[in-house]
Image (cartoon, rainbow, N blue to C red; front, top):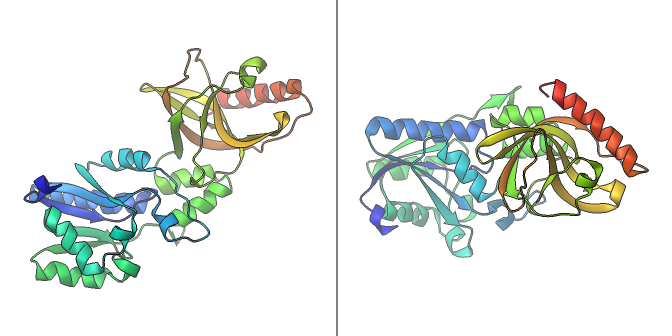
Length: 297
């Protein structure tokens, strides 16, 4: 990173764990200010699951590092600094943390949310950051939180909605469809036997859970998009308890094994049901498909 010492930047500070509308506002503000000043917009965040490092009962992430990187870059960011989730880095006091950033970049200014904290124990706050910036001839722009239905948009709120299967409200808070990415693997091919082949991907155990159920959505493969019926969860008809994501793509017949795909969720269709026979499951899938073929759900 030493080649960046003389690079003038405006830096957005935050974890940006779900890149929701509030996070986007912070990042877009940094991009605009940097563009106006003719300098590089940079986002500071963490690589990995920061919430897990601090423990807690809800220490799961919404998007992994690769997915967050794609979302952040899509907002016009030229560079992302991914800090390690390590005892050494998290053990820096507030002054050492800011000094470290300034050893990497020629920082013209900072952009953050009003609740941003930093340094060991979270002792650094907006007041401290503002004083530090003024002392170095820098600026701080504080971005107000974004609210919906008189509630601040937060990752915690998004996780609660995900666990309830309220995927449409999740989409509203994110500003885009919730999605998962992964490599398609060869499973038991029960879907193919039923006449509905599926693309299956595994989920990281540290990923926040979406309510088990059947969803409508789209699958993106090689820059192409296909409407899909998606099963998120277990497969009780076959006594399989592992939570995976399997998607049946409409109007698609090629082999997907080994390909990286993106599965986007648009609407909750129904709960997962244990059927008495595979034939009963096949009949229900036909009804589910009829529903998503005719409607933009």
